[in-house]
Image (cartoon, rainbow over all chains, first blue to last red; front, side, top):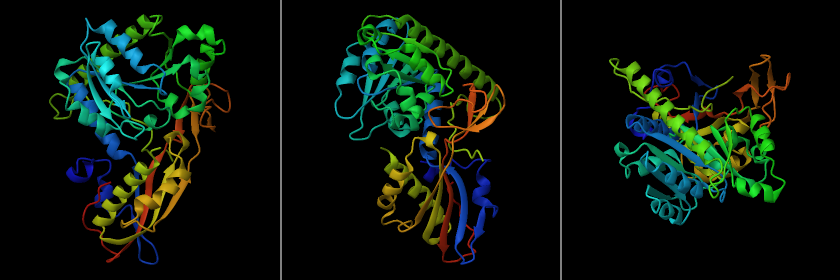
Length: 279
Length: 126
């Protein structure tokens, strides 16, 4: 989309298009052009558009990431049951082949949009944007994005979410943040799931998982919970409600700030570091 | 892995630049990649020829600068180089640090042959 509409040309980068400042010529007459552009700019740009859509409709978007089988769908089932009376919820589900998860979630009364990713190992902002066309954002408070089960690739793709929630189930082992730093560094909340199994396993130490997270310079809260027994669910629900209130307050502030100056309201994304030159 | 799709993004950006500059061929593509971007440079190098085949960048040399992970400590103010999975200050061991380098995923520079080497017209989608 950026390559056709030109909307990615900003005050910050238009000098690269217009002037000669970054264009040099080598001795053999070939041109050398300094670009310094993020390789995922097209995705990040779409992600900002998505974030703006969510903001315009006062919707909180939460991206759930974990390895396969960590309990994302079970958590969502329990969450929908707990919030159904108070909030309007939809789920965008990324799944390689089946629509099993989407069908499970619909049975709990939430709208669920299935994105079959085929062999793709992650969702990207364009896929989420397409799914948004099938959702009535006016009639929603929270959209969960259930990413493809994978601790590697989803971490690199901003979807336009407001919060990243990473699940780590007790059978996986407590040192996962150390092994997958890119993923766990992005977490705004770490959920230690299947806590009902922790006593049976004996070798999963929640404090060790938290320590590994801190060693990634991440001060995100850590909640132990079990979707099956319900332990810890209240704390998770409180975190969600607080996040919704905080985002809505931000959206209100942004709208007030941008009123009268012709700017876009809303977009206040958690920009990722990449794409900037740090040197 | 998504290294192939990253390569396709590189090619798309390079093609846009080459078209705007009326380049006949792209000879060199320079990238800056840090380990916290999640991209493996070896896989990227392997995937690149497949994405470049049949484009103006076919045969271009891919140069990747592997960037170190650098953090700044908010406790002692020190700046140190650290491993990607241990972002603790190298001086005082605090975890209250921020990344100042190592998450780059940047197209840094493109070198190309232009039919008219002084051509500066058109626009480049960057």
